[in-house]
Amino acid sequence: MKHLRKKLIGCCVGLLGICLLSGCGSSSPMFLPYESNFTPTLYQPTGTAAPDILPLMGDGLCVISEQDTGNLTLSKELDAGAVLAVQNDNNTLLYQEHVFDRLYPASLTKLMTAYVVYALEDNLEREYTIPVEATELPDIYAKKCGLAAGDVITIHELLYAALIPSANDAAKALAMAVSGTEEEFVVQMNQKAKELGATQSHFSNSHGLHSDDHYTTLYDIYLIFHELLKNEDFRAIVLNAQYELHYQNAAGDPVSKTVTSTNQYLTGAVSTPSFFSVLGGKSGTTNQAGSCLMLYCEDLEKNGYILSVLRAENPQELYADLGVLFQAITPAEP
Image (cartoon, rainbow, N blue to C red):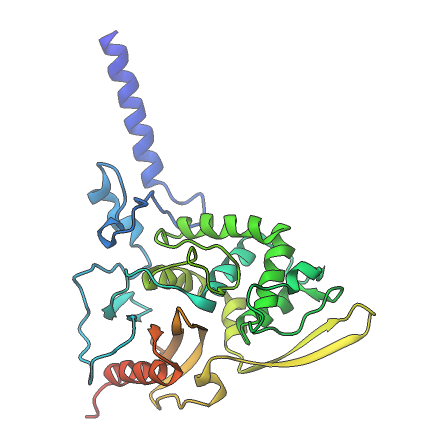
């Protein structure tokens, strides 16, 4: 009996080892369970084997500790709630402040919405008829692209509307188009977030309008954005300063509508530092979240960077703080 028990234990251990070491059968990244309590130090895999498998979890990501603030020297202290600068090509932390603090994401939520749409929808050109529920939002002043019940629009056009002008009606329509109801879609948002390792977030809607139960951390948003940047369609969408939406109204008449990016670097409202090209991102603003922006850019040598500021006091402070980060990254003239 003892020999049988030993054999069984040996088989189990062997199978577990094979499962941990084999990753070639799937194109999905390998993630292991995280603790669910909200503490920065708990962004760690659970189990006794954790120290040995931690490198697997950090493969292709910038792994940040609470103590590591990066090596950038900033010209002034920043007042934002959280700040992050990462060299994306080699996943190197340049600078961070408070990336594990719980904050409200505002329309940065739409990054998670887009990720779920790409994960679940296999036909972006599928047409969807807008139900009246998709036009109903909890804030009467929420930004919309003007969708009306009975409009017929593709999933792809809804992505453009959600990501470029940050239309909240488009984000809710995406949720309903993909999952039937926004509630079912939110379940997928939270599940997919955990699969990405973004375990300190909880989403309660698809658009980011304020809810006390809708929160994230800057590190979680980084994980989501980093994964989205691998998607060529996403990168092509968020690069646009403007876009002309095309769909049909309930009467079957064609509708064309020009929408403008909320990213002021793309529109030229804020000048991009000469050493860099801004290639897209996502902004967000609510009273509770402040002004937020997650940004992807490249320098003249095509090195990629992810820069982000959350909970700036206003848009002017947001872009001023990002300007400080750009200045710190810019190499000194010889």
